[in-house]
Every structure is written in C-alpha cells, then in structure tokens.
Image (cartoon, rainbow, N blue to C red):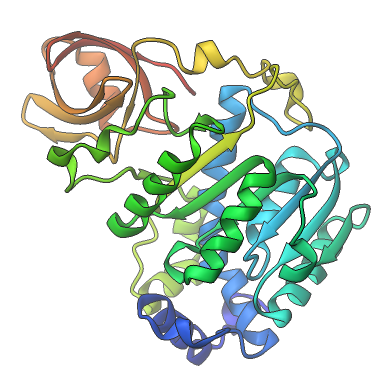
Length: 349
C-alpha cells in the first residue's frame, strides 16, 4: 500500500474515532488495511513527533544503555517503538516487546519491526505476561492518555514503577498535556526528569494562576512532504494542517551515573550531563513565541515557575529574528530585567 491507494472510508472512520469517545468501546483496528492506512498517514505524523523528541535527547547527550530491552506499550501499528530502535540503532538493543489491547495491532507491529530490523528479537506480549516485578529497561508510551480507563492507568503505573527509562509522547492538546503534567508530578520524586523540563522542581503550570496554560511544543514535518502531491492531497482530504504538529512529552530515567552515548549518533554526542541540562537560568519556551510589531511575547518555563516574558526587538535584534523562525528544542539562557529579556542564547541545537 502507498499514499495513492489509501482507503478513505477506513481513514475517515479512524479519524472520527480519534476525535470522539467511540474508541472506549474496544479495539478500533478491524483489519490489516486499517493499520496499513494509519501507519502511512496518522502514524507517520506521530513518528515525526517522535523524531523531534529523539533529536532533542541526542542534543542533550542522552541515550539508553546498550543492550536494553524496549517495551512499546499500546503500540498500535508500532511506529513509536520502531522510531526509538531505528534512532539509536537496532544493534544497541536486545529485544523489542510489543503490547496492545488489539492482537491484530501487535501482529502488524511485529511484522513491520521484523522487516525493518531482521537482526532484532521482536515479541508480542500480553498484559498478563507483563505483570510481575522484573525490571523494564526502556518503556515507550505514545498517544494513550485519552484512552485509558482506571484499570489501564493502574497497569501503566505498575510498568512505570519498574522502568529504568520512560519515553512518553502525547498530543499537544490542553487536556492531554495537563494530564501528562499530573503524571510528571507523581513520578518526578522517583525519577530524574530528562525532558522537556530544564529543572527538577515542581511544575509551575500547577500554580492556580496558570490553570489556562499547558506544556506543548511543535515538531517540524519533513520539508519534502510539502512538495509531495500525495501528502498535500492527504492533508486536504483529512482536513489537517500538515505544518502543525503540536505535541507534549515526558522523558524520565532512574538517577544513575551519566550514561555513555550509544548508537549511530554516538560520535555526535557528549555523555548526558545532569548539571548542564538543569543548569541555573535555563529556560524553555512553551508553545511558540508570539510576535508583534517591535516585540515578542514568550511563555517561559524555568525552575522558578512559568511566566510571560517580553523581548523588545531593539534590545536583541538577532535574538528577535531567531525567535521568528524557531526550530529545535526552544531551550535558552536569558539575560533578564524582571520580565523583560534583554539578551539570550539558544542552548540546544
């Protein structure tokens, strides 16, 4: 199957399901065609979000330990697990475990993973198989929060408690992002927060004055899709702005000595340095800067909390220009006069 041969009845049904509560009735994968159509389109867009998160981890110098097992929980068509394995290199993992409430989805995800990584051991696993107390090296969770009932949330919590690393990506909507912040607050005492935060303190969004705000970011789609007539048609037919990829995410690991980078990008990365990645004064822009004539507004998160800052173009014209076309993780170190930014530099490429 390719983008020219998509089954639009399938895609319309899936999109309607994702936008409503119909999915709570049970698995929404009916046939392999459902999974193929999803994997090529909606799943690929989720993959671009994962690409952004994994590039940020590389920029921070973080990598999983060599020989780790990856568990893709709620795998769907398997995009998240495949992205993680591919990014760090299949030879750096011992196994890819796949779990979903749909056996059809697990089988599809396993087939795709075995095709991409013939040297990697790939296994489907049930929740019964996952119950126990054995450690989990890398737990991958993607786009599940708005689908979990109380039982599934308890299952997820038990898996996280046994995990060394949690890689978690969700939609960038207000409700889901705020829910993910709630999980962060429950977990950050037991884990080290790698990203998106630049600090290890409580989330400033939980202050009553910040109730209307949420932690979200924007991934950049591959530029070539805008010259691809099949992707353009998909965006028009599905009513999707291909330029907009909002996401929320959370990366946690157990406190340990700095991990040595592994995989094909190892020569590009320094070892993860907790002090550097949580240094005093580091800030992250939530959402995107908002530009007006002669100044920009920034919703800023740092160890002191979240606050709206103002950058005047005349104070830092190059910085102002850079913020007009932001790319990559928006992690900066500002020079401030109260809520006014007078200088700054980007800290992650």
